[in-house]
Length: 348
Image (cartoon, rainbow, N blue to C red; front, side, top):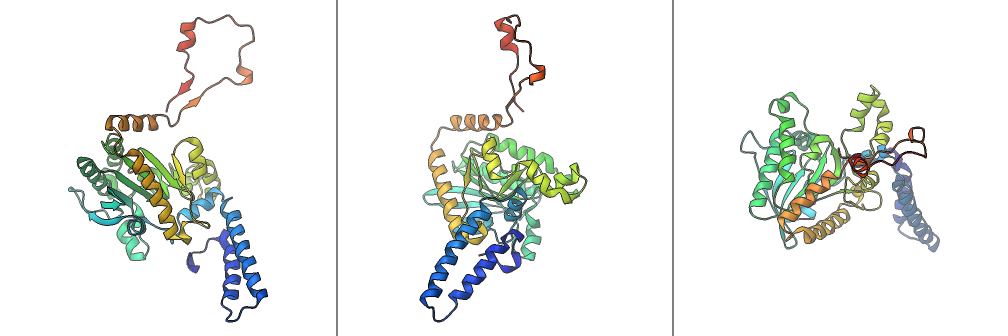
């Protein structure tokens, strides 16, 4: 359960009901009336969580995705994988702790795990730069992915960042070029790649390790080209419009699944992943195991072609004339060659 210091405002009714339930359960002697009341409150608590978390607004989803108690990459490394051996450095500048890489074992599969790490304590967050990776982090990631491809091992990417580091030093070391190169390399990497957004999926920082054969996200994660605050600052010139921006960005799992940006949504435990790390890890492990079983052994040429087509399909839409622009009913027939030449779709 989330700590009392990290309570979200919309969760207040849940915590109030949990406090009442805890008080009754702490009584040394419980009468039949008290036991009945406890059962009633437990049922009421479950229904309340379903009601609140089943109708989260986009900004509330962002708050859940950023919850300090939400499981991070290192938590999943401990709960989902075995025999993790961390690999360091980009062989160029240094070792960025905002991105962790290493060999691991998931059941019978040997895999390479790449994931963002924000840190939980103040010291860890400072060391990990709050999950905002520098160019050396992405160089490290793609270098280790190439190593995995060399040994015919799948790659699993866990995405959880508000974005790539925007500092002067990162820009001087080629942040944009490194992210673009990482995306290019992942698009043609000859081994299966599974990407999962476990918390925040912000901007190019997420895309830098987000090109894969299967891209999924947790139910209360978000995935967006920009943060709500950044969008509000650009469009409304004020961060106070962050809720409107979150609504407009269509960044939640429901929206992105409908738009075809993600392939699957992993359901979280009732009340969010921050309330039950072990159950969330079990769900993620089952999801990864199923995708590994599906992708491992597939011919590489087929894998790369399907990966290419998957991302080419994104952003396709149809154009049609509005009622006021439609031609009169009686129009001369156009030659078949002209009809075929007219574009009906745009591929961004």
